Length: 106
Image (cartoon, rainbow, N blue to C red; front, top):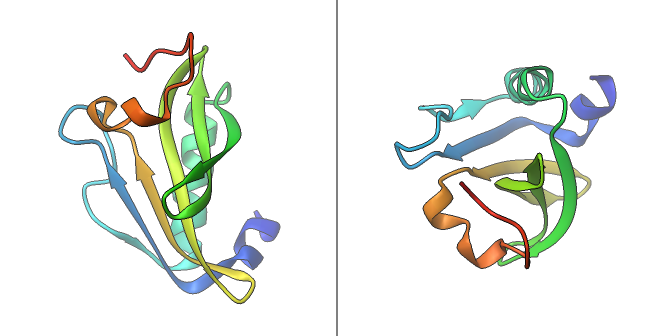
């Protein structure tokens, strides 16, 4: 958790888009402590979640896969050496462009 906290800017904001289809944080999560705890909570609830590097419109991000299925996309805004924004796209309807052959979203 300390390593994660060092990479997050003190005022970092996390936004999650579940599109009303997938359960996601309904409000912006603000602050390095809260964002770190949120991300650690996700990992505890989904320990099989795999992070695969993927290019996004915002730069480098991660495809989150669970059991071979695309679960979501995480992208980040970095200033200096700290993450200032985290975006999680979890809505299956918005994941189509990131699906690789043989991978499913639902």
